[in-house]
Length: 508
Image 1 (tube, helix red, strand yellow):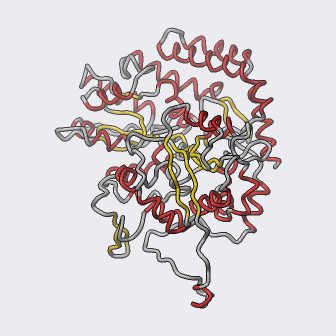
Image 2 (cartoon, helix red, strand yellow):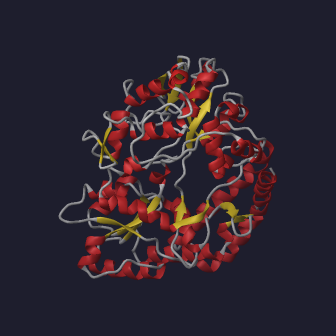
Image 3 (cartoon, rainbow, N blue to C red):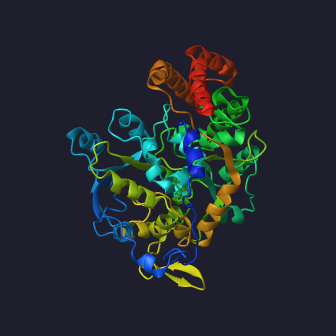
């Protein structure tokens, strides 16, 4: 499944709002192309097609949907833009660096945030904020999604990448449980962490060799549990105060650690929770060894296809901690997007491709494909062809929702292939999203270097100490000393530097 940042967007968004550009929404019914109604037939007939061009695009190569040169998505792009996209696949983790160093760079890259922040300031990628006038649909997108614009804009106003948007729903982590087991034993879904604990104890009594509650990302999962306790265990902007906060020092985080210590001590979570991999996690879920879990949303149905004899998983509302309500960390955004080579000789074509990818028409065809080829319309609703039995088939067979093939995505195309249980999960999760995203402003190079050592020391001490608290190796009576030591290591310095970045962003 898957791999935050800020900058100057005031001028960008103002000009975007003034520009007469098309929106980013889409319809779920049919769409047909037609000349503007104010155009006479003779005038429309004289409109020249865009100039033919060819661009090279470097993307990751996912084994689950290997790149195909004849993916229909590239045919549709050619039909609409007269641009031929030659897709090249990375062959390893160093592919991008080697491509940049070689001097034979492709025109366009599919990149993650880290790539853009690393190679952009080095001069490998163009500052796209200087080219927005040629991308009115991108302008419209930025105006409609200022939070996304902030994340991808550097402190100096440079924009070295454009984020994709629309497919982030699959990045969401959620709770789910064995509803068949709960029904069999007349158990209720836990509404709070106290009830989660009591329910886990009952399940442990019923299944002594089980560990009723399981999660597989170790300490990183605490970032997903934290919102139910009103925090993230990291540095982030507290929306209530508008200030940078370090959630680890909040009393809510101590409560979360106390719960997990109790779960571990009583054998309600597996002994290897800190280092569990996907294979181990799936064995617990599939073999009646665990009955409540937290994982990526798509795993509900992946596991359901493997469970047998009536076993079944269902979405579970997140239990409330000390925040008064159960929340799920807001993670339904994307870190993948586009970067443009600073060496491209096809800039006009690249910008034209990007603007199409972020247009209403582009969103529609790059999400659904083409009527008669990928879908039919029945009773005013689209129905994907029988070839597409599950969402991954759209990727494998058509290239839809793969790296570099879309700017905006209409997720309802994938949702149309979901079963009722899966669709229910995606509908329910939006009710519990924490309003605060776990993001930070981008920093200048000197600001980053000024906190690198301190940040590493704090992270190492945090991870070692919190693990020991949960494992019971350090008693909770030492919590205040733990917080005191964190402060001595320099938490305030990090808060101050990130606050400077946040204030700079807000000022612009």
